[in-house]
Length: 306
Image 1 (cartoon, rainbow, N blue to C red):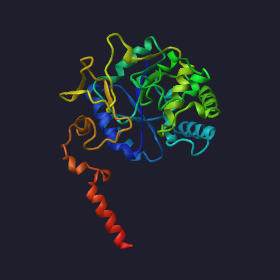
Image 2: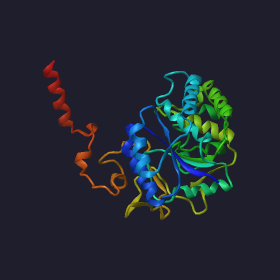
Image 3: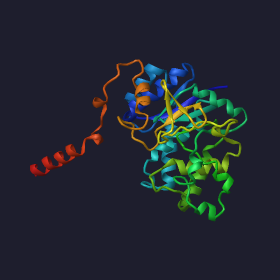
Image 4: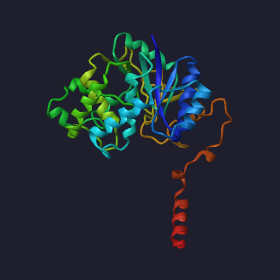
């Protein structure tokens, strides 16, 4: 059985990619990892990830481009805020018979590939509490009104940043047909906060994958993993969910800018600079973190130059 991990990245997320790969390799030196380029600007990140972590590039780049172009055409240019997120759908047709997909704004705290063992009983896995917040950022109430999904089915919605499945359980034809179906009913989807792939992927999985499992429903429960949750407690270089007294499997900064002062910054910083000199936070601050006074001063200087 050929198992592995897929990620998507480009040169803009080199820092996040390093943090993710450091965390994966900290607990797992062997599981193969394949990079799906997010766009054409990936030469620097792939060089770093290949040399330092043994990451390989997706073997059929022409297929990724064809897939991406076709999916864009179905909805039309400009419909999605971040259409390249759909490139991750190449996972279904790639190297691995069983795979986990992981966003780069994640760090893991275990041998994350072991979760593929759940695929002995299921065809699709996820691991989050997206469903607890209702259908926001995925569907609109129209899917309930039109009886597209039952209340029970809607409890299986998930975050698109971490999921696993078996190769070819979704065919290329099914992918295109599902996208066309979704494009015909944009009223079913909640794009209000500029999500792109998550609503469509959820629709496809709920329609096509009947043997699915959310790992947080395992016996004894499972911890949360969103960095916006404030209850997690630091234990060394890992986090504990005190609600279950269990260590987190991974932490996901979904919708949160990773920078000094963000939630659980010290955890991310630890994995980013694992085996490297640890820089001071001040040197890592972004332009968006300038003080209000600095912003006002800069605006004043610009106005005086006009």
